[in-house]
Image (cartoon, rainbow, N blue to C red; front, side, top):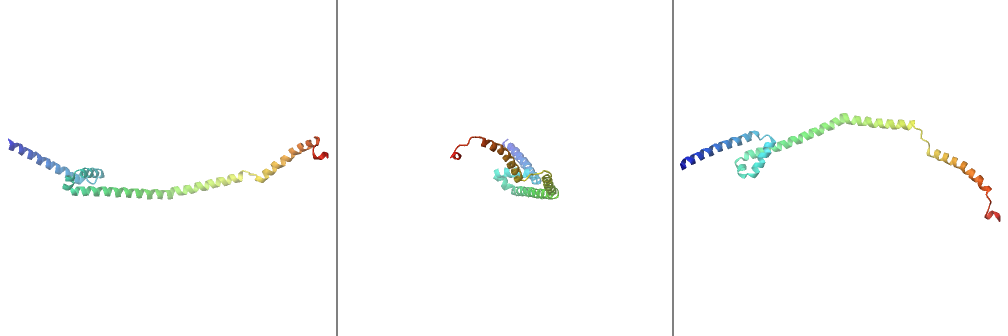
Length: 151
């Protein structure tokens, strides 16, 4: 009976070993996916034995992650160039037109609205004051004179 249990155990171990190898071989096919590659690297970083047994898979996972980063960097660069070109074609001319429109509107308002010269406004104010003061000055001589005039 001991031999039968050993035989069954060996058979189960062999079957498990075959299944395990099939799973690892499937990983070789799916290693192109960066998420799978990242998970495999995380697993192999914890299990040194698995990394030693499947060092080729580990290296392919690293390569897959590097390629994914390069792909993302290229996509960012293309997006940046595309945004710059679209701004040059659409955004910049509209910005220039908006500035010209603002300048034209301000210049038109400057011509339409009459602004008085500050000196003219000040002269008008001064011109109004003596008329009011002259009435006050006329009333003062009627008051009795005191001080140095009486000597």
